[in-house]
Each structure stands twice: as structure tokens, then as C-alpha cells.
Length: 134
Image 1 (cartoon, rainbow, N blue to C red):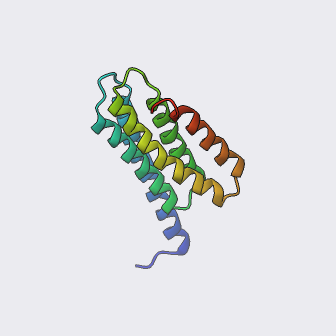
Image 2: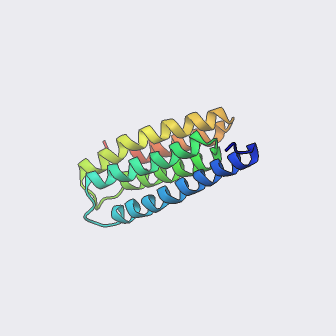
Image 3: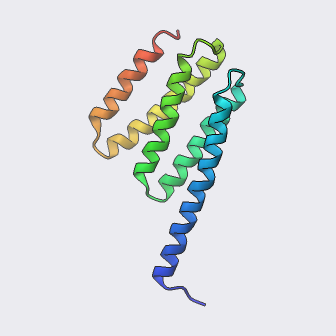
């Protein structure tokens, strides 16, 4: 049986919505673990990987707005963890390394869409927060 283009498109849209819903649940679970004071490096990395998976699903499906949103949430949280004095130094340095990568992806996407000012603000903010780690 052959699907019409409209039916095929609706099927693809539904698949995307279900994928985003599922990864959103994973995101909130990973974020809940990150909110705990006894969060481990492994849980930080899982949070990072979950956000990257979410961003990739959005990117593959051409949803630039949701891609930027997912990467922005990741980057913001990593920058927050860089400055979290309740975390040990190794945890904060890992957050720094992961935040550098998220900043690169964010700025690349912002540059593609011509949002130079926003990319510059993100870079300046990152330098300000990262400066005191070392």
C-alpha cells in the first residue's frame, strides 16, 4: 500500500513529536539527578549526552529553534555548574570542557542564522564565568 505524500509527511511529523517527547522525559530525569548535591561526573556527562541527543533530533528534523533551545539549556546549565562552589574542582572543570563544546555548537548555529550579536554575548559571558576557574 502506497501512502500519499500528506500521510507520509504526517507520519514523519508524528515520529518527530514522539521522539522529542521521549527525549524530553530523559532530559528532565537527567536534570533531576544533576540537581542533587551528590551528583557524579557520570551524571553530568549523561545530562550533557541527553541534551546533545535532543539537539541532534531537532537538527536532523530541521527544527532550528528547538535545536537552539536545547543547546542553550545545556550550555546555561554547564556554565552554572562551572561556578557552583558546592561541586568539587574536577566536576567544575568537566563542566567547563563540556560548556566549551556546547558554546562552539551554539555559536556555529547562531552564525549560520546571522545572529552575530547573540553569539558574541554568549562568548563574552562564557569567558567571564570561566576566568576564575583557573
